[in-house]
Image (tube, rainbow, N blue to C red; front, side, top):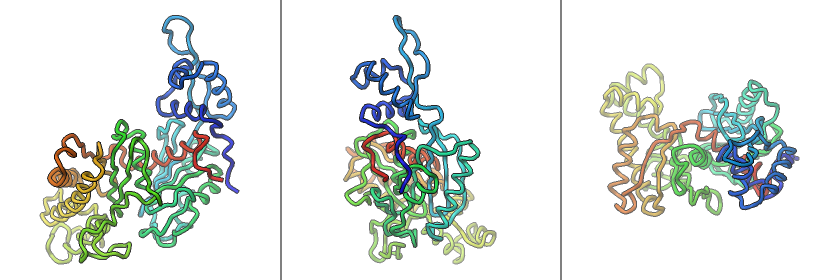
Length: 402
């Protein structure tokens, strides 16, 4: 049996009120009444009930505008959410307040291939450390992002290429039981897209693509301010779009996928090959020092003026740019946000992708299309995961977790 959801909104009115306080900050009862189209008496009654539930409270008087001063309403001061961003090689944990401001974070190394029991044990331990340090016994909820396909309704991973042993594993339920609170699970790129929508560079854009370039490659699709998951929940899995039938074998088992050319693992593979073949003295030196190269080492070599590394970066960016150009023609987004660990390779990667997209897409689609790097960086996953579970706690008709 999963933890109770008794500490959540009970009706649509309360859900709207909590959402406004989360997204807009403290508001007066009169302002809330105007925004919601109800009387101040109704607002007062719902706030009183939310106070009993431990979700919101009255917080003093508003500034005078002439006449009677209205009462201010705010989220509960002790409201806390947890966001867990699980990557192929790292776990990031963040604790937020009710408005999803990040209060503290903790990061640990992991190998997603060791399986769900070991990785989730590390994630829960890191979470408990963050909670203990903050003096929090139990958060209102926990959101989790993982680097693979997810059945959002059931809270399980589904045949994830990068995650052997995770297929069908009840990740959501395990986290919920481990922390004693409601939990939600989604694909990491969806979670990051929601983070950017909430408080990142995409906050004022309702139709955008969030592209994650890491060990894997994925795309979060936001339409009219809502995340689009597709019928089966795997929308945006652009890493497995085939770009060359005779290309290298991908982790999914097919040949020539974008991820097999431009993902972090592919960059590392090509960097090691360039070092061992003598095509790059800089990469060869780094290989001798480290024993094995990563995608980050390509960026280091580029900063040292290495032509071979620059070529690897350029080829990777062109492959991604070509796929994104097709998406621009199909979706016509208002913004493209690029995030993930591979973006640490620098603005040269972004500039190359921009060039390809602007050249290969119609001028009408790209004339006012910004293509930018994520402002939240690693925090996008943490904020997005917290936002997803807050949507459940703050909404009476959110996904059932029982």
